[in-house]
Amino acid sequence: DQQVKQNSPSLSVQEGRISILNCDYTNSMFDYFLWYKKYPAEGPTFLISISSIKDKNEDGRFTVFLNKSAKHLSLHIVPSQPGDSAVYFCAASVMYSGGGADGLTFGKGTHLIIQP
Amino acid sequence: DAGVTQSPTHLIKTRGQHVTLRCSPISGHKSVSWYQQVLGQGPQFIFQYYEKEERGRGNFPDRFSARQFPNYSSELNVNALLLGDSALYLCASSITAPGGNSPLHFGNGTRLTVT
Image (cartoon, rainbow over all chains, first blue to last red; front, side, top):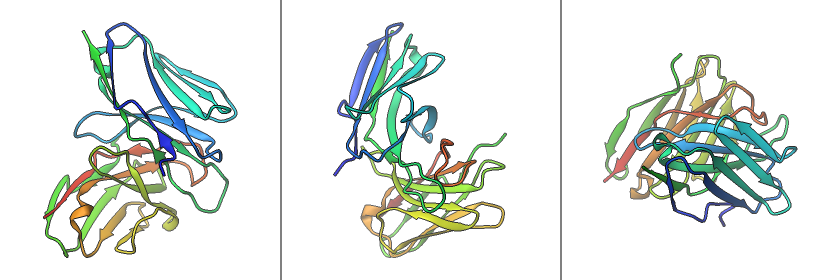
């Protein structure tokens, strides 16, 4: 049972336009969400995160939106640049103080291709 | 500053053998996690360690074990290797304890091939 779903395996966007990557989750206990970017032969690189007390977080060209009622988040990249071509992973976790940790639950990723 | 470093970068083993993968976290990071990524999937959580203690374990068999050393580096051990263990093994470190909202920073991984 996949708790974090990225339903688009790939997305092609023209350079300069907006890229929108989507992610859905099923576990209502998730309260911390992250986006990672991965180039071939490299580990995932942290991009941006959001906790469930917010519905938007912005960092430069990257904005993450969280809709808790729909259990949906999205990553907007504006404007898209050639270097943004990579696989993007959505991840989620349950934050709680002390005790154990269940790690991050990742989606399968979306391959973003920025066309010139 | 050096990021998370993992060794070796590539490894080929035979079914039934044992493997040890190593990870050094970012300086100052006390939490280390291990993830397995098979082709076409996202990373899957294996273990999390903080201050040398196991703080979390994913849904992996007992053939998988790990430990964290006093200098916060970590080893992942896999016994009785199966073909299905072929994957990219990622180590990540973070500055906060489990439950904190600091992101994980990943190394470039060890590519394990089991033949």
